[in-house]
Amino acid sequence: MLQEAFLIALWAGITGIDQFNILLHIHRPIITGPVVGFILGDFQTGLAAGATLELVWMGMAPLAGAQPPNVVIGGIIGTVFAILSGQDPKTAVSVAVPFAVAAQGAITLLFTAYSPLMHKADEYAAEAKHKATDMLNLSGMVVLFVFNFVVAFLPVYFGADAAKAMVDIIPTTLLDGLAVAGGMMPALGFAMLLSIMLKKEYVAFLLVGFVVVTYFDLTLVGTAIIGVAIALYDYYSNNSNDNNQTPKKEAKTNGI
Image (tube, rainbow, N blue to C red):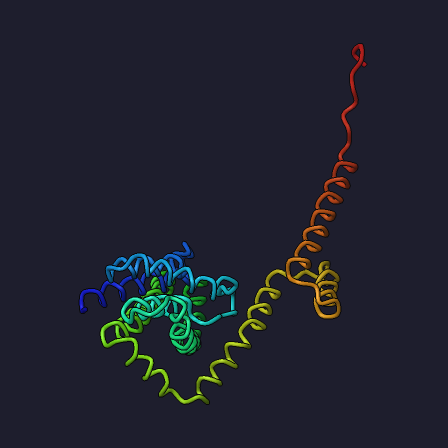
């Protein structure tokens, strides 16, 4: 089991980097499930467990500060549990979610502890110290790799049941606190996006979107369609104005 645990942990480390830094989406359960199944010699169950867990995380993706339960650890540990225990892949969800919540809480703490180094990276960038800036940013990938490697290795090597018992030992108060911190992340993420993207000319559209979602219970798809309609109107209106302002060339007839 040592060899299998090492290979799965290696895969978890790689996909852990992909989740935040590369985004080839190999970290999704629909990919990690079959890979883990192949390593453990049960590709079919791995595929079934991965597909089941993908449904759980289908609508959740880490965007800016919004961090859902960790899809890498949840997907891998859930698949391992389904294969090693011989249970129905649907039962993998009950094991995957607690691991995913605990792992994301730990990553939230990791990001918080690492955040002061970003100011140092800004200083290096301002001083044109390119190598130091690159090394500081790459060190974040190393930390992510090691974290995912260790968190995936231990449950596989010692058994998912033993690891789940360790998760259950974590005080509920601590998990609730981490959950509250995670719930604040979406607001922080949108605030960061608005600080970069929002212009005073578009504040009116932001207010319209807020009213539509809050008071008319419109879904995100409906709101997005309204946004696309406004964007198309704005695009073609600007093009029309530009064409009207462009002086037209006079046609020459008989040399005049």
